[in-house]
Amino acid sequence: MLFQETTPDTSGYMIAGFALTFLILAVYVASIYVRNRNLQQDMDMLAEIEEPAVKIKARSTGRAEKKKVKPGTKKGKK
Image (cartoon, helix red, strand yellow):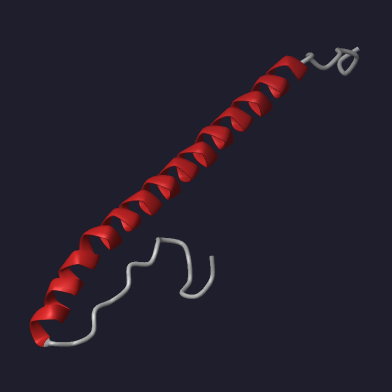
């Protein structure tokens, strides 16, 4: 009679725990995605800002000018 009690049904808590864990992981992955996208935009902007400064410096020293290359492409490939 001492051990005849049934175990309590805690499956609802287990499902809630899994759902909460999944939600937290989804928010974390979305945060990493947004941060990466913002970092790429910042890097592209810095590259665009740096290009005119390089051209001006190259003209003043008499060296050949750099050709403008779109971000994300390699020279000679389209």
